[in-house]
Amino acid sequence: MSFYTSMLRIVENHIAPLAGRVGSQRHILAIRDGFIAAMPFIIVGSILLIVANPPFEENTTFAPGLAWLHFAKAHFTLITQPYYMSMGLMSVFVAIATAYSLAQSYQSDGLTAGLLSLMAFLVAASPQIEGKMSLDFLGGEGVFTALICAIWSVELIRLLKKYHITVKMPEQVPPAIARSFELLLPVAGIFITVYPVSLIIQGEFHILLPEAVMYIFQPIISVSDSLPAIIIAILLSNLLWFSGIHGDSIVTGLINPLCMANIATNAAPIVQGSEPTQILSVPYWSFFVCLGGSGSTLVLCIMYLRSRSVHLKTMGRLSIVPSLFNINEPVLFGSPVVMNPVLFLPLMIVPVLNAIIAWVLMQTHVISMMVVMSPWTTPAPLGALISSAWDYRAALCVIFLMVLDFGIWYPFFKVYEKQLVEKERLEGSQVVAH
Image (cartoon, rainbow, N blue to C red):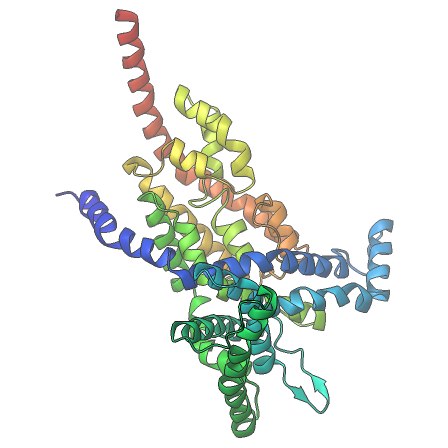
């Protein structure tokens, strides 16, 4: 049995079924939906950081750039204020949306679950101290607490309903009023469970609950930002893609909380005038690791456009535009790259090499770390430029990676092209003979 056959059997019999179960697990799906719902607020809040940080030096002679620079400096506080109301409240949006999605999966009322989750999160993350509510943990640093509160709120509602512990109203009471009374015991349950824990941590350790949660998760965050962990995530994602499973949605569903927390951690210092520290983020994954989509297949689509194979040339024309916007399902399934032994190695090697180069350049501060959440469909060089707060070297890095990717994909493409050209020639000969 060949190595390829053995590996394929392991993927089909063990890795793919496990990944399928993980990817369809209701809590993971709810977390994914929670971050998707929060994404517009995060993106808009991030863009304001770009407005507040023009890509020009103080001594620039470019008149529009100088005007922008003076405007941003004079109105920095006003420009960045909406950031605090959008990206600065990221955990609030995540708490509500995650609870809503999880409640829907249980066929429960999403609105009441979202409101209960919001209350639980505020009790945990923003208690009133000296007449004021703290906003320090409503952004990225409170995201893990928000997820815990969302899951606990929904599970508390479910448990109370399961054991019929609820306030029942007469049938004549309108449904909306009945639902509000049904929420009385879950609200009391949150105060009985979350509030005492928050008070104990404040009293014993003089920190808020989200600080304790972040302390617990800090080793995971640190490990996830390491190069070996990133490489493992990429290999798993592309191995699943090769077997026909949407690996990116499964892997990013697991690492999204870490990516979001990291981008928020990086964005905050920009407002405060210090340096970002985290590498793993959605922009890093979208604009450096996956150029054109999972497997970094944008350059493959470009090759297809000039292919001697009719099939590959057709696929190039169909897939080039989606791939420019990081959507590459057409080329993965149309080539196909999926289950294609000829294209297996570059599918695994190229994104890993991209990740290593970008990671090293960011770690050594040759290019800036990502601080802005650009839409993942933004073309890679532009997305890298925006996400790095106008660091032109990030865009140049993307272009360099594309050239490198082209060199790696090319010989495998030529082998596959030769096979298809021969196959098309034989099929054409048979048609003529008939």
